[in-house]
Length: 143
Image (cartoon, rainbow, N blue to C red):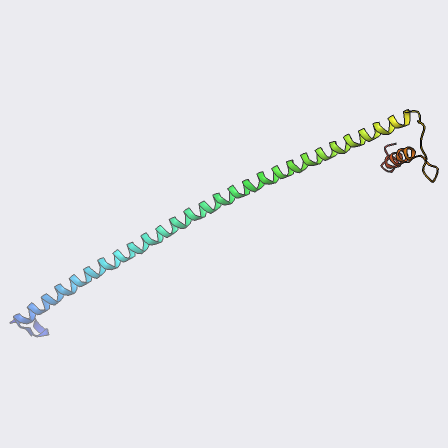
């Protein structure tokens, strides 16, 4: 029997019981504290991993976006260059055609009229063609 003064007396079995209980409670407290800290560490690592994956995805998306923008810009430039070249070729073809037509009209004007056959209106077929060429060039202001 252990005497505690004003608190009373405690038997040896009660002392052993209280000591074992205190040891079990202390061990449980330490174990639970370790469990909680390991769970917090695992959550922190998972959060960091998710953030790293999200950052990689964002970086890849930005890189893909920049690459697509660059590709679209190159396609636009190529398309604009092709259209400009096509317009230039069309303009050159029109100028060539107009030059040939003007040369033919000038050549037709310089040749002396040959003996011409007339149609029922009394007009020459050749003359009508030449007049058509002249009127064509008069419309476009080349003469």
